[in-house]
Length: 248
Image 1 (tube, one colour):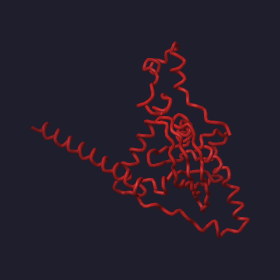
Image 2 (tube, one colour):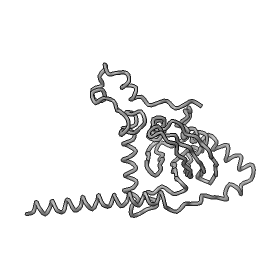
Image 3 (tube, one colour):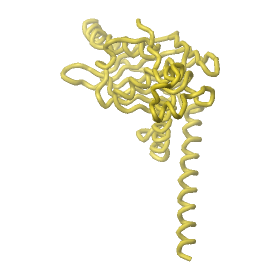
Image 4 (cartoon, helix red, strand yellow):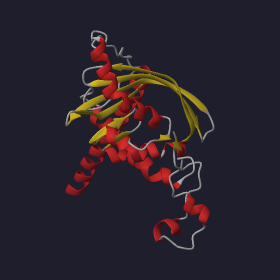
């Protein structure tokens, strides 16, 4: 009798949890497609003197340059220098935690995209932030389509030894904020956790495929992956290698 009761309680808890996560995902999807767009504006920079403006631009030029090249899949030597070690980058589908994870995900972009063109890249400076209004043309490998994506990169800065570094990046598609614990008390945490799961999954799957999509690609053999067979075919071994981004 007690075992039946425990099973009923267990299944109800599991059912309620699954339902809660499903509703959270529906909420995230609604906010991404129909949520209120935020007008990211600031008069702070406009009110600075010419000398102060020049100083701000000079101190942040490298950050802006590196970010643009990363999103365009171009390799640059000083990309690590702009991030703090525990930096966070997120968009509506993925959340990367830590500098190494962020750079790893950027390095995997050539597996998913043939080309990324920047059609708009307007920078706005704030005291501890950089807002970049951008529009990109994304050429996917599978399916072979081109998608236009616009929005705002909200880059929050942290000062370390007198130098500003990137503490977080929020890629706000269509100027709609990324939903998380900070702006949604009820659904923020499960939405954040789902993005983390997707991120870790992509970091595992992408290097084993040619387009980043396990549904379309033939992955490497289980034998080669698990046993590291030295006699594996070279074509399979190549799938383990991350494509090198273009050099600027």
